[in-house]
Each structure stands twice: as C-alpha cells, then as structure tokens.
Length: 179
Image 1: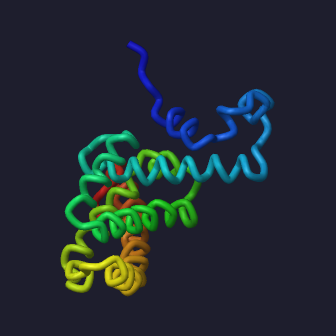
Image 2: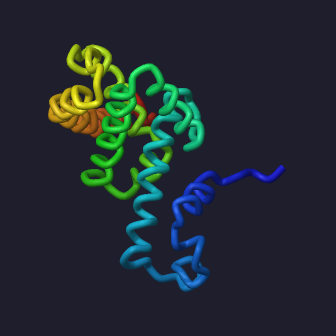
C-alpha cells in the first residue's frame, strides 16, 4: 500500500507551481520567486493550520483537520472563525520569532493546536459571540474579540518558547502542547 503524502495533494489542489511546472525549484534546484513562492507559502500555511485542527484529535493530517474545522463550526459559525483565527495566529507567530528548526513542528500543527483550543474556548465564553444571531452581529463580535485573541495567541507562543527553552534543556523532552 502506497502512503499518500497529503502535502502533495494539498499543494496540487491549491495549484502550487512546484507540481504544475516541471521547471521549478525541484528540477532546477533554485529558490522559487514571485507568485510561485507566494503559492508555496500559502500552501504551507493552509496545511499547517489544517494540521493544527487535526492535532486536536491527535492526527497529523490536513484532511482530518478540515473535517474537525467544519465539525467545530457546524453548531455556530463564529466559533469556527475564532478557531481558524487562533490557529493562524499561533501558527504564524513561531515562524516570525523562532529559529528555522521549529518549522517542522509548525508544519505538523503542534503550534496551531493551542490556537484552535484558544479560539474555541474564547468564543465559548464570550457572550457577544454566543449571542450573535445575525451575520452582522457575528462579524462585529468577532472584530471585538480579535485584539484579545491576538494577545492571547502571542502570549501562548511566548509561553511555548519559554517552556521549550527551559524544560527541553533540562529534560530533552519537547513541551509540544503544554501552553
């Protein structure tokens, strides 16, 4: 049985130029530029965010993450949006501040996992989001919650960095989803 690499499926579904044009970085060994680089970065971000959702049920798979995201949003769509925003914030933050070695952990969704739970938890206990019965009131509630979610997502990333540096040095065990 051949194993299916879900990154290739996601990249080809998003029309990543690496899979469309054979004369890309895979065959030439050069770095991608321009729009192809943007598409590669977008495919990486989407895959990482979906894998963060998948990590909620302990699966490193973007397709599982897509199902978890949809299932989380079925009862109340603002909750799904908060989960997506939280996961995106906690996925992008480590890419900006941490060394390149953490890219593999980000790609597997281990940073986004905390953001999904943060977004879902925040939206569960925020009365404005829970009482949003129209699209306009839902958008207004989400915009009001965004600064707090941004702050808490960055705080989660900082806590993860602090815990990983101190705990991992002492025990050589990664903290993964502790914060």
